[in-house]
Length: 248
Image (cartoon, rainbow, N blue to C red; front, side, top):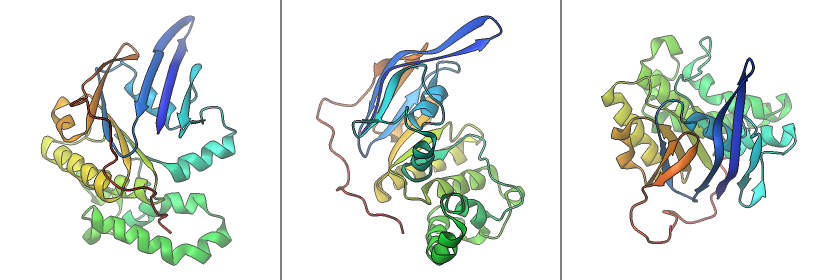
């Protein structure tokens, strides 16, 4: 479904070139919940940003369903980020002046013209309200981020990431700012979403305690995948039928 081939990425610090990814190869299978683990600085987050077209590789390519996406024009990549990919970050990135519901609705605000939004707003509000209920926050729907706990803010971010019915959810250290109990609840929720919402999930983490709930684990060291700890040798079978239906 999603493939990284010979990915290289480097940054410059003054006159020094720092290589982050060194010819990395990875395949993400349709319907799986994949964990990418590794120490800080191993390139996990950089890889996730390249897979989701938030950044571009210096060499190599990213393909979705066989078609290259890392070199698409800006408008096409914008559409992918709004519709195909959903993103969950460690630091939530909720807008403090908006209610929980309006934060969840933000991708729809961005993805529509004014006229299109007014024509479909009732449908999107129903979708957002249903997702808020799914993540267990109906009683907080009018609250602002400062009134929420860390776990509640992350669940809000998950609902926002799901609003546009993405095919792939990219989660960058989604439990990094949470205690063990809240982190376990977030991973349980992601597993539920993987099954019920029919979303492929790629999760980056350094916390080995939470990867047991996922289908497959790959390890990164010095910018490459060095180990695949998949269970068994059976060919991968999606856990749900295809195709998926649009949200609205």
